[in-house]
Image (cartoon, helix red, strand yellow):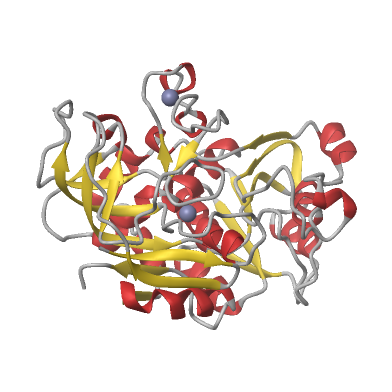
Length: 379
Ligand code: ZN
Ligand code: ZN
């Protein structure tokens, strides 16, 4: 089959690799119809996290079941399915507690949490390919209505729609609440969409890239361009001096100012400043225990010195971590089916697999308009 293969920093190739096969009774093989390029794919792409040469990229996958192992009896050949980016066993302590993001059995390294086509998430190939092997298929796969309807919406169910929603859950967004989301990348935009769905009265999205801020406004948010205004002042003014109830961090460890200079503490400091006393912050942008290319000595060791003293004084709760996709994806799917959610609106490009090399390059350079790329391997 054809697949997007990682060769080294800034080097991916579309190559022929062996087809995946059923290796155990609980496996399924999915013929991929859509696989998205994710902002977090850029971390290994840029060499900011180590990734094994020869691995197949892609953790945002959906498709049609091509084959199943002898022990798979819920999911059937021909089913259209979404594949959560977390790969989980379904039976360990964390899985049974609902934290499929921290499965204790799926990652052979012993580290909690496994996934597809991503550094430190186990040996599992990703789905930027014609076919994908999914272990524990009955547990992991989410069934979708057959056909091709809502493809661009459903393809957001594997990661960024649930991840954005998880940010609003950690930030305790509820009807009438006010919300500030930092980062208008795909996850920030999904957090804005989720906050509106959850009935927030005011949603602010902070970024400096005009095309992304324009998308945030399409989702009903108020755009705040931090290269032009003082964010704390602007949000304080617009909330009658109160600040917001909830804040979402959708940027992660490469937080930078509008000149591109990295300041790992920048977004957390701003959140602590704009979230009102007793409010809540959900941090879903990716951070890592080490970052050899980090901007400071602390950042290289995954340490971020932010204004924790003020956060404590204000009694702000802070939730973090990868989204356990299965906790939300069924209900988010049904919002799509009933026309109440349209996450596919952020898709900027639909491309065949062969265009992946160019798409990685342009997405990485933030070429204007490259917001969310969906690859269609069958195209
Ligand atoms: Zn992703
Ligand atoms: Zn597990």
